[in-house]
Image (cartoon, rainbow, N blue to C red; front, side, top):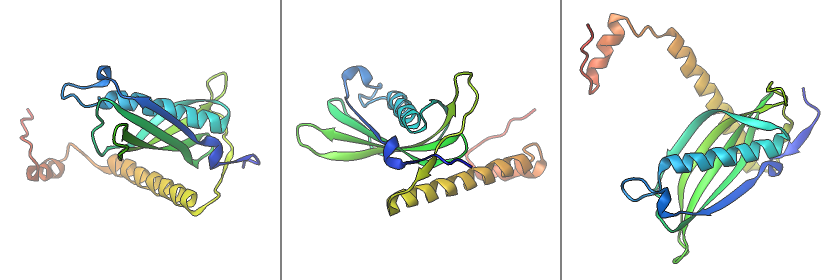
Length: 182
């Protein structure tokens, strides 16, 4: 077990960027892929700042696009480490967009990235423990634990499910799908 502990505040990172026409998709809204790129960058920064090591993205557990982002809005992303394992960290990110003419701010996205700390040889390295300083940090830590448990249950269910069985194929009849398997 680690003897080095750091507060959540040591992982906090915030970035802001003005959304330009070059960031749009075909409908004129900011492209989700561009937002994902920024999310990955801030997750890296938060995890690396906290761990003191180079970090890689292991998984993107949740990305909820709640509201579209418009050209000309100022997007601010706030990230912090919510959970630590041995070498992994779950970074929570909140995305807000501000209409800089009206000052109206909207919550556009919430995301959770699992990052892994690496040493100079590319091997996983232990990260510091996490000091939780308030009930909101405790809530986020507990939420991350629950998310990990649910993910493990899903993985176990997938191992046990025989997708080639007659019963499994028959269960697909209630969905909007047509099976044409030869």
